[in-house]
Image (cartoon, rainbow, N blue to C red; front, side):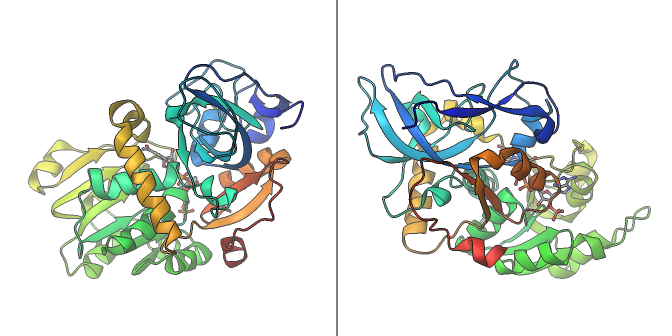
Length: 354
Ligand SMILES: NC(=O)c1ccc[n+]([C@@H]2O[C@H](COP(=O)([O-])OP(=O)(O)OC[C@H]3O[C@@H](n4cnc5c(N)ncnc54)[C@H](OP(=O)(O)O)[C@@H]3O)[C@@H](O)[C@H]2O)c1
């Protein structure tokens, strides 16, 4: 462990390059049922952009350290924690002491074990997007093999995870992405059908070429499940793509605006709108999170799941890495590697997705 571990602090709300300052990390000894973790890799998420600019549902007082997930090695264990120094873990810290730090002291309930063979860069992206996608598909969306699932923002973190997990669940995945590069990435990620939004015209009164295209792709029926990650005006178009007795899972608003659902449309078209907020499960059903984690690790161990880490950048490049995400230049995920990570980068997906 470095003597002076560092962290990225949000000192003023704004875009990451203006908001973040490198300073000292809070380096606390672990209390009862806690552990101190030397952070080796950090997975960046869209929510980091939101929290830096004060647009996230949680607004910690300034200054705070953003970041929702990391991976590393336990270096010290408090009393009553059933953990061992040296163990590799995924860390899901809580704001205001987020993951953009070289050391984290957290409760043992915020740690998930990972096998020795799993690279830190992979472990760092195994929680937020994959758990969200898993809960959206199964726990909230109730997908059954053979059903069709329409996924917006499919080339992003949660979307890519939903495509991969949808394929593993035996569902037919229809991906929405903007531009040829992102559409091609969705095909590589396993989408059965891809709709490039850049090639789809705008809606005109009751006619919407997007709705028509989805109906064509689903034999006129509409999608059984829609996982809406983008929200806003796209989300409002997507509700017209849900089939009879379908489910629309509201996951995010990366498009920047929260959409709305007219109750008469839900009634007349016999579909359900369900929400998903992953963080609530930490309090309400932590066992379910742990069991999904074990399933994800098992899928990775048998080679069925390869998280699409497009870029691995240095801890010191956090603001620039987040700026790439904000410009929609990342396919899948971007990960930061800290100076504690002395292992050679073993992240096969970076070459494929560059
Ligand atoms: N409900 C939950 O518990 C939960 C958990 C995790 C994340 N989320 C939310 O899910 C959303 C996606 O997160 P993520 O980490 O997957 O994000 P991401 O990697 O940045 O992907 C977002 C996707 O949204 C699309 N998009 C459309 N308009 C956009 C815009 N104006 N700016 C940025 N992206 C836009 C982009 O696809 P194209 O460029 O191809 O259109 C991009 O692939 C966020 O709103 C996040 O807060 C919710």
